[in-house]
Picture 1 (cartoon, rainbow, N blue to C red):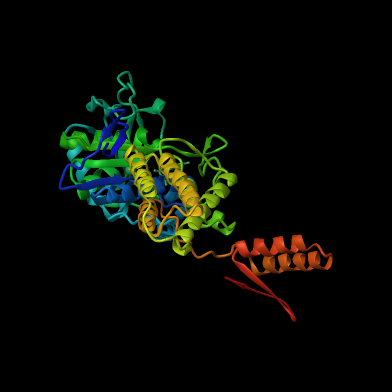
Picture 2: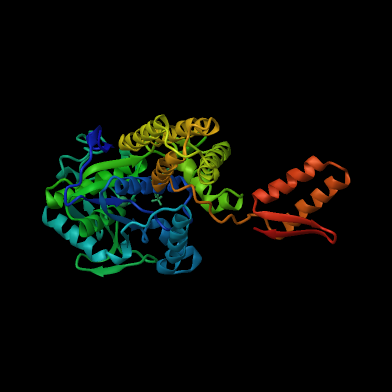
Length: 466
Ligand code: AMP
Ligand code: ZN
């Protein structure tokens, strides 16, 4: 069976193909750069990366656009508090986001586009909406009249027919219960950035940003639009209302939404205060690929509960994968080719690929690899796995890693300060004096794990970062 995705719009799993020349035109909602992103956000960005990589591996070309929201209520508030312009303020967090993405081995979209660099596309879209009779102005702000779009609610599968016409919201984020006319263009206010434009002075709302930039760069109908489930309503519902009222064409053919990363069944978020940034976890000594693996292993439409045990299990899984790879590189199997092993390798590859084809079922895809490794290790122990079988096994691992991207070890930087290392060494010295060698060895191993190599010399203990 070919590649297929669950489409939020139709609530069905559908076979996927690209509309034009085998090139997937894809838009994914990017970060609001008001702070460091947390690993909940990164679950969604890792999902985009998985989607990209599997589309590529399946033979598609990509034209992937992701926005950077660099003008928004929270940004304005924080920049004012820091006494900076929004440009200065967002530059720091945009760079931090790009660095974090690189750390997590996320491929760069073909285009990263900033809201502030695309204001004319937004005012143009608002002008066209006004011409289509979908807008009205109140106190200098321009609103979208949702009653003008009878299909409003088709993505989130809500019936909004009974809502009060004319009630409106100025904030960008709100609940289903608050479905109202939403703001497209916010009137200029003291202390806020302002653009002088053909539709008057002001700044764009969040929703028009994505409609305008998606259509500017990718055309009127996208193949895929993706985001976290929290974006289905109102953000993506509003994007459809805006884009389709202008073009009268379907805005996106496939809508893909990833579920949340949770902590004790609550969504990880800045506002709940239950979040970890990537940087925090790295400081605690977790490798980037461990975090990437932990975020990838649960299929994207299932909630993923974050735990430190989960991270440890992810590390153990990567260790197993690497040990098998090492074995393929260093064992010297006897000449020849074992047909049963050959068949088993082909079968594992088939299972791996068909699991990802099935709406990116990473859990099954990974299970296929681990079951294979178990069987291949048994065959290696028994001398059945032959030299002629190695290449196909290596290929399978490479196929796995072209989407998983976890096999290559990253440079481990120790999160420990010099003082912390010194304190651990004192502890170890104490343990040795007390002839508790097991404990001394354990401390040495823990330091090694954290990237610190220690050496006992006549002059005492020397250490260095590996
Ligand atoms: P933001 O920077 O808040 O606009 O969010 C960026 C992306 O992260 C959006 O696509 C959100 O849907 C996603 N997101 C936010 N919180 C979580 C979470 N706890 N789990 C998964 N994705 C999230
Ligand atoms: Zn968006």
